[in-house]
Image (tube, rainbow, N blue to C red; front, side):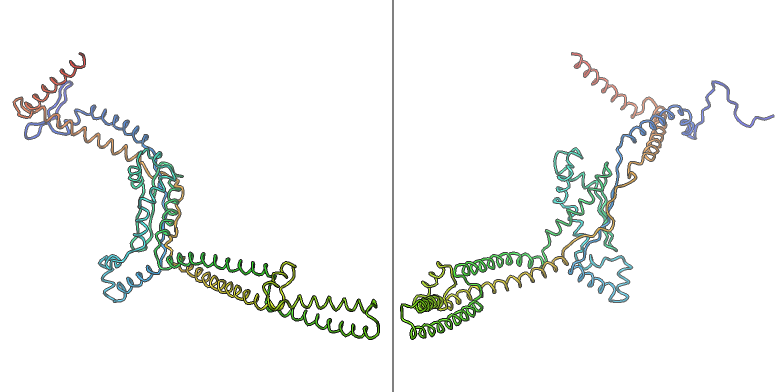
Amino acid sequence: MESSGPVLVPGYEPSFQDQNGKPEKLWLLWRERRSLWRVLWMAALASTIVAFLIPRHYQSTAKLVPGETSSNSMAAALMSRVSGGGGGSGAGAAGLGMDAAGFLGLKTPGAFYIEILRSRTVQDQLINKFDLRTHYKKKYYRDTRKKLDRYTDIQEDKKSGVITLTVTDTDKNLAATMVQAYVDDMNRVAAGLNTSAAHREREFLEQRLKTAKQDLDDAVMRMSQFSSKHTMMDVQQQGRAMMEAAAKLQGELIASESELKGLQQIYSDDNVRVKSARARVGELQTQLKKMVGDYTEPSTAAAESQVAGSYPSIRTLPALGYGYSELYRQAKIQESVFDFLTHQYEMARIQEAKELPVVRVMDEGDVPEKKASPNRSLIIALSVLSALVLGCVWVIEKERWNQLPADDSHRLLAGEVEVELKSVLRKVRGNRSR
């Protein structure tokens, strides 16, 4: 009965060779299986240790929608007219994947905000706020910015214009907080860079409003001081009241004089009633003269009345009324200017708010629940596979090297290099021993 294959005798090692008389590669690998197995489990152990030594990284992502200003709206209308207004031409441009904004050279709001996010100003604010030099173990701001930029990913969707901001860090809470800080600092810097006409008008009106407010306060203060000094509140009302009081006093004086003349015809001058009537007439004349004032010196009379603590006289009232009216007119003018500037200032603030470049947050950066990296299973699998491949290559190349003849140029060169290296090593050891 014929055997179906070669008989393997204990201690006998078959020699599988190819057409050139060299051992087959699969046979070589099988012969060195123990060595390859050691390489596998050592690589698995080492890669497992390395994979678990790599710290976990978490990603927090926020989606931002750039706010549209009037210039952006005009640009969008122009782009839509260019891309869709021409019927088939717009469809052809969209089909070719042409970006109308880029084709026309228009500035998109997303690109502006992305540059702000990547600016040195925003990055330095984050570095100082979260002490990232200590966190990243960097001494200089430049190196810290590079690492921060490496851990920050900013992408813009050209179709929707939505900006995706992703921050990676070993601390998941810090990653979420940094995303929010990115948005806040970006809005602050964008507001500071606003150079629109409404912004310039608001700044001008703000300075002018401060000046008008100071002028109005000065005018009101001068009018109040004048009123306090001359005891004047309202010229027309005060003049009418003084004229009525003077007319009433004049009537009482006429009645008292008539009464005095009647008593003089009946009684002598030494009579008590005559003396009383004469004293009353004198008092009324003094009050009337004081109220009417001195015609020749109105300022002196006004000063005397001020010292006496009474109201100004009728004769000095027109002169004082002119000064009061002038101060009142200036105060009303400054009040009208202030009201007008206040209205214009509020309108400019509203317009500036419309044009203020502010980004709206579609999705806030939340605290991640799962780690983003490292993928330990993938690291271990790739490491073991790489070690296996390198081990196979080593076995095959080692066998090929052993098959080279002794007088091969490569083996002779290797021998020379080996001798030289051993000589150098002996010298180094001798120097160390000495």
